[in-house]
Length: 579
Image (tube, rainbow, N blue to C red; front, side, top):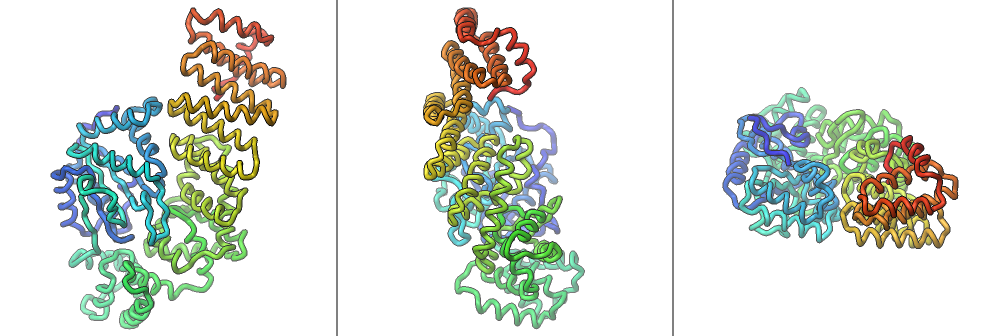
């Protein structure tokens, strides 16, 4: 464990620093209320809830920065975005590795929970659970729950165990999250900007875009007040002032508002975006459909390739122009190398007002499927960046592939996501994906694919120290490989069974499995694999102790293999571990 920092200035995580174009404006009263709540409440959680785009994440970012600037930040911070978390275990592993180091990841999940809670109860930390609506799903935004019922139960238990602790959890959500009780979290509703803060934001936007505002114009005041202090809606309407007189803008806004659905929570926001869109050229329509399919991040080059290969081909100049407008509104935020973060409000608006045609969805699945398939065989360090950008896009493409019965792409996407989840220590998520992949292979009677899934499920169980389940999965994989005569696959599973027994210190059984693997590799003239197994075997011999070494050495000599010394010399040329 790393102890809390003693420095006067505690660093903020990257997610807490990325504020909007104008910094943190207003919310002074709420910031102070938030500070008091975290100091005084017994509940571990504080839920900040409000409609999409109202500024929940910005509030938390501004609050943490204010604490840091006033030297009031006494707690280390873990920030989690729940639009990219698909298992409770993954979140736990991130905190375990940060506090105790990677070697602690092999502990059972319950022990990890106990260790975390012990640290969090006695030391001040702030955990931020951002975009928490993704955990349980949001029907109005067509969001399926990303966490299972069991995962959500574990989140509740976690909050319960941190009651009256020094650690607090700040939660942001579009929902009131009624599945969490009042003993687990208090709730703080967040509305739009009001009073002086409202006008302060207006003038910041106007100054940024070089607009002149007339405070005394009754039409201007009426127009802005109709936006209920929603920052993104205000920004969208202000951009129109550069080309449209305010009295005409007010009339157009009221006409669009009349066509919104009665009682719609964000009717004023949709009206503001509709007003902005009224001046878009027709060529933007196809671009908006493609953008609407993307989740979290958009990559310009990927979008261009996707549209080039579709029936709605559009030039890069038009695509970039459309992106620039959305960037000005704050719905897309540039990062680097043509990458943009997507505001959830944009996803919601485009799904309702520019639903993607079947051909657009197919083009999206096609490119994402090929891209994911390309990444599956890469090393983890090469997977990190593209999966950080496109993980949510891969998942959405997978859901579309299932809908359109594009089975080849469904297999590629599921396999790539499973491999990355496994590499990223998200064992629960990886297990679910491999089980889904196994079901796909089973439907198509693909025994080799099914055997490969069982083998990987065995490796995951082994990583989680569930040795009984690991052996069962390996033996199921082995049976299918033997049935199909897959000699290379059989040898690999023999070696994995040897590794499993080696971990458990079942030295003789491990030796027997390794020898069976080496014999098959030798018979197929795979000298490199034989040398690799020999290197592991020598390590086994050294680890086993004097009481087993004679028998382990005798088993190798009786196997009919080449001399151990010769193989050991060859194995020294192999730098990577077998598994």
